[in-house]
Length: 491
Ligand code: ADP
Image (cartoon, rainbow, N blue to C red; front, side):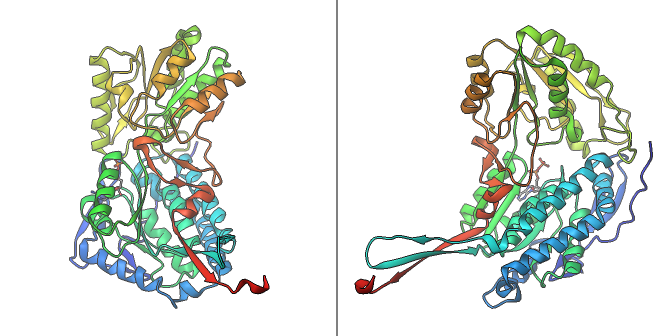
């Protein structure tokens, strides 16, 4: 066991045109330590005027003839590799910034940093491999396509895994030759600001990478309504995703990628190895304090093993070590803020009122910081709020089912469609379920295996567009068609 030292805070100002600056209107907002409720630091808050400055910096940097625009694609790749090297060099420090602000355990944030670096490296390999096509068009013409950057990309990210959210979006956007303006969540600005300093150290030209901090309805809205932002990528709640889409429609129809909420089913069949399945289902819900959009938060268990499954899941949850996220023994830190804490407790109370059986947990821990007991419900039915709404906390719903047809219907009985999973030894079950479930990802005998190469995205109200892997690059690319008339007498 060791307790990691709290970090010194180095950057709290906006990052525009490769320099840290104060906000024009001298506004600041506090960032809070969820382990204690205390203020960590005051961060400069960007409003519309600051956003305008960031947009014009990013616009200038992506103009025809700019240093960034004329740079060899292979050199863009080298800059991304350099950024990955610097993130790796300072990984332990950056991890402490996220642990301090969002309460994820130091083990989780170190893991996130490693994954963030892998994402940047994956995209660093792409810039000089983004080929257009030659098309055998009808008539006396030759048609080719050119893959061009969209331009200025606004990236609005949530607080739950700040470095992964940043890396999965800036990686493909920069690889494709765009410039970016990152708006971190107001709860977690520090790691994005530190990484901004690393982009400068890596040698990215002025204006390519910018960070504007602040609240969603002010800073985020200024970006999503902006007439000179060409692309917006948003990861967060479905309700805000709708606002982003509307803002695009009301302004310049900027291209939108949305990765939103989920209520993902994980289906355990009778033939599963019960110990493995219990561990997997536990991990699928409780990983990262339960604050994961793909969390397998509806655990469907076939009736033959249901009672035993509930008993073992309760034992696992009750044994979780909750506490100081800087202690390497801790597996669950605090929830990110008071609002999330209250929402989780309110949903747990609704589960009890609606008749689910509270097997373990269910309460806030102490009265300092935002800690919640790991919680397990059994006897959950589909109409209960805990089975329908995204809880985003350490709360497992174990639901009994009998047949494949029934579990397909019930899995799909949701407004969401982000993740899903199945645990079984039967290939027939795997094929039947994975074809029928309406979700962007199906994990078979595993859960939450996310790699830089594999696309992730949603069906239904979990959003649209695909991130990670090659697909993500095309979210940031315009394909231009060039048709050339040719004299065909010699062809
Ligand atoms: P969560 O529910 O996980 O806190 P939100 O969807 O509220 O997620 O927030 C995710 C990100 O969206 C944050 O960076 C937040 O500041 C931003 N945001 C919130 N409201 C808006 C808005 N109206 N316009 C643009 N961005 C917003």
